[in-house]
Amino acid sequence: MFAGNTLTPKEATRLCALGSLALSPLTYSALAMSIRHFIGRVIGPTPEIMGHSIELLKYEGLVEAVEGSGDEALLRITDAGRENMRELLTANVRATSTALDKLIVALKLRFLHLLEPDDQCVQADLLVDACERELSRLDDLRRHHADDVGYLVSWLDHDIGLLETRLAWLTDFRARLYDHG
Image (cartoon, rainbow, N blue to C red; front, side):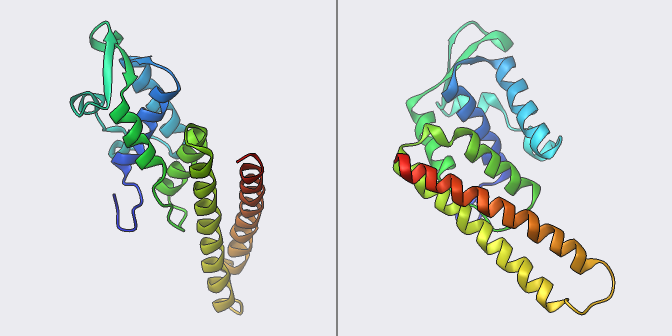
């Protein structure tokens, strides 16, 4: 993990694999395609993220083959894999908007229902806090450049509007989790 207990690209890929198998067993080839599809659609194809080996997950005892072999081996998550998935899913979120951060938020929202209700609420709090910190950072930048010529302020207004919309959605989402938790 990065400093601050946030996920590295390798760990984001691992979360995608383990979460996918927590939803249902998949063949090796179907899991590889699922990981590639999800990550590729969220942030685009990226060799740094796509290079994670499913074989390593097997070697570490996080997934196991239950039948078949090779690309058609049916894989499932182990208890150790579920614990590792939980650790990854409950990692912190950075208050930035990089492609990796976008992927981590998408993975959290895809697999959040696999956590206990209390852990879901904690993760919703983290997502709201990260969005608020990013919004504060952009608001400060906008104030600093408010009198500049050019297009920066207009672009920042656009980004701030998107963040305000995201924050409203996350705040509502968090309230729904607390109502059901």
